[in-house]
Length: 252
Image (tube, rainbow, N blue to C red; front, side):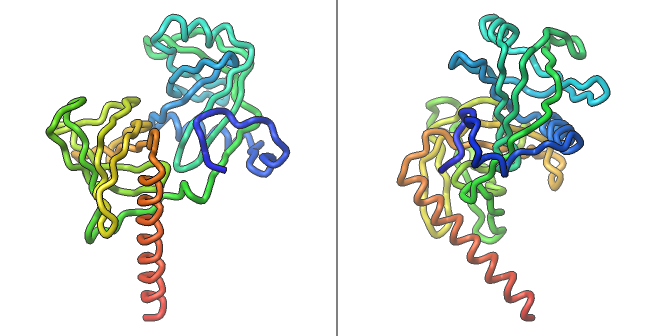
């Protein structure tokens, strides 16, 4: 079974992945908010909206979210009696529920708040573990400078899995807008070859290693079977090289 963007059903086999510790739940939500990771909100009628966590206040037992821009989406969120929040964060699918959303404001912007969840699903699949790309012969990604444009920007790939990747961008040269889906990109995977992919930018934050760069986390969209196979081959190859290097270090 693979991770998908839709809510996971209530199932006994998922109990192993449930989190009930209030402290851990608060900490995860706060980290998601700090990294401006996108949150998909399902309203029970098959519709969904995209938001971000603006604030987590354990003292008031509430989390505040950015209000959807679309008026219809706003109405659905505020009228829903069962909201399901789905987030992909650090290679883990996070899911929780809320019953009532109340309109509010946060630092002058439209927002809504819900009670902090008492339980949270944290689901991870082996194929979504990301590997750091090696410094020698590092992978890169060619991204169209404009939709449909023939000019591309080459971005350094920091880590990768068959679920997504992280790239390093420099806003003064080229930027990846948060939440945007970018198609017709080309991954250059050393030893494997070029792979045509599309991805959605799910989080953006300043790079710890490069003061001028931004680290952009991206989730693959509509990944073709051939592309999936090539990505898996590359991930397996990098993992094997890293295990070999670790073994040599220990034996030395």
